[in-house]
Amino acid sequence: MAAMSAVVPLTQDVAGPLAVLAVGSFAVVLVADYVAAVLVVAFVGSVLAAASVASVLAMASVAAVLVAASVAAVLAVASVAAVLVAGSLTAVLVADSVTAVLVAGSVTTVLVAASMTAVLVAVQVAVQVAVQVAVLSTIQVGVGVD
Image (tube, rainbow, N blue to C red; front, top):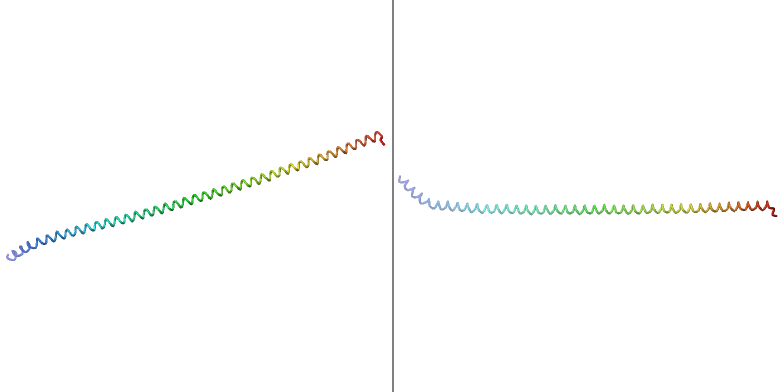
């Protein structure tokens, strides 16, 4: 029992400092946990910030692609419009050329008709003169003009 009685006071002497060490160790663990939690939150925050930056950059890239596509579409429409305008101008020029040919053909037809009319008039005049000469010759012969 003597040994037991010697152990008990030793235990009581050691129990106080051990309790202090235990509380101190618990406090160190709590501080370490707090620091770890802060570091985890900071890490998560930096990952989220990086993800946000990446998201913004991705959206900016998509926007740039969409703008480039829009510009390309506008240029394509402008090119088609230019081709259509050029085609319309060509059609107008062809129509003008056809009209000029038709007008020239009409003028030629009028000139040919006028020439034919002139020939017919000349033939008619020649025939009338010949008839009149023949009639006058016959009258002079019948009257006996020597």
